[in-house]
Length: 331
Image 1 (tube, rainbow, N blue to C red):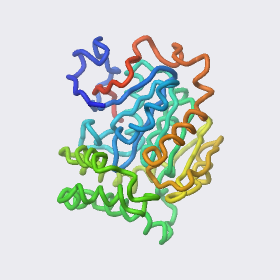
Image 2: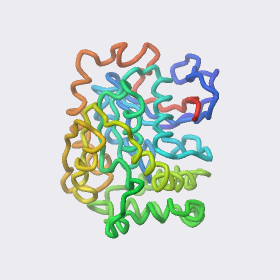
Image 3: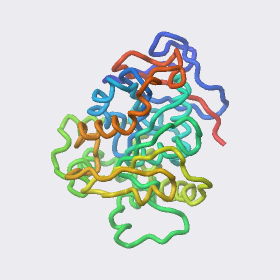
Image 4: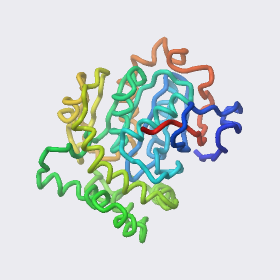
C-alpha cells in the first residue's frame, strides 16, 4: 500500500473531510497510517527494525471482520522523526491521540516487539480505550530499574545495549551501512527460525524506510529509552491491567512469555508459536491472523461498527494509507 503524505490540519484528509486533530498545544507528530477493512477497530503496533509494513500479510486476513489500523510509530517508517522523547509511554500517547483523531472510542490492540510495550501503555494509561490486548514476542520491557541483569540475558540483548547505550555513536556507525545492519536482523538465525523469511524486496522496503534521514537516530533513541525511561516506568507502575491479555512468544526467540506479563496484567493467556522466529506476523501470518481473530472475536459480534466502537467519521475504505496529524500536550 502506498503511503500518501497530506498537509497539516485544515487540509483534506483521506475521506475528503476537514482534518481536525485533538486540541492541544504540545508536540505534533505526523503519522503514516495503513488501514483496511470494516468492523471493530484493531490497532497494530510494530517494533524494530520495522514499520507498519510488518503487518502487510496479516491485515488482509483480518480485514473481513475488523477495521485494521497500523501506524508507523514515532520516528520510524514514514512518520515524523522528532528529537524525542521516545519512551514507549509517550509513543502510546501518540497512538491514543491518533485513535481519537479517527473518531474511535474503543479498540483492540496488538503489539509486536517494542510495539508490544507501546500497546501495553496504550491500554494501561487510557482506561476504557483498549478492550483487549495481544502481545507478540516481547516482555513489558527488557529491564526494570532496580533489578539485576543476568549475564546470559544481557548477551542475548546485545543489540539493545549497543543501540541504546550510546545512541548517537551507534546511529553514526549503523548509518554507514544501514542495509547490512538490517539484513543481519532479518536473515540471521539469532532471531529467525529460517533465514529466508524475508524476500529481497521486503528487505529493501525496510532499508528504504530506515534510510530516511532521522530514522536510524530515532531507532537508537527507542532503545536508549528502553534502558532508561522505560525501565523506570515499568518499576513505577501503580496498577495491573484488568483487560484480557493474550501473550504469545516465538519458539526460536523468547518462548513462553506469559510469566513476564502476569505481574502487570490480571488476566493473561497465550502460548508459543512453534517452529517460528521473532517476526511472527511475517513468518506465520495465517496462524497469527487466526489467533488474533479468535482472541478478539468477542469484540467482533453485534457491536462491530457500532458507535461505541467507531464514530461516523471513521474511515471505511479498504486499503487506504494516509498520513494523519495528531496533536497533544506533552507533560
